[in-house]
Length: 125
Ligand SMILES: [Cu+2]
Image (cartoon, rainbow, N blue to C red; front, side, top):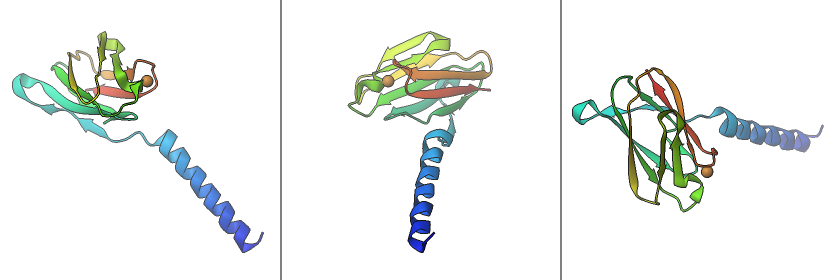
């Protein structure tokens, strides 16, 4: 292989590695909800090409309020569904929609968009 071929191959491999890491391995950071009034655990979640944060840590046995705000015109995230808690809500663009749930049991609970494309999870401890 010539030096040019090695460089091109190396750059190609680096690009592939980055794509693999970005799309399959990177899950974003886990953020804990903040406890506010009356023991309510509260957290703001931005909907923009995904959920930020996509992993939310909360304590079991205490109410949780998730403040969802859709910050994009794309209608993919228009609906938020938390199947394990029977919650489904419409998210108008740039409007914060609070969803309250009561996580009784520890475990991981998924929340998704209406088409099950964007995913996030609640980690109840
Ligand atoms: Cu969607």
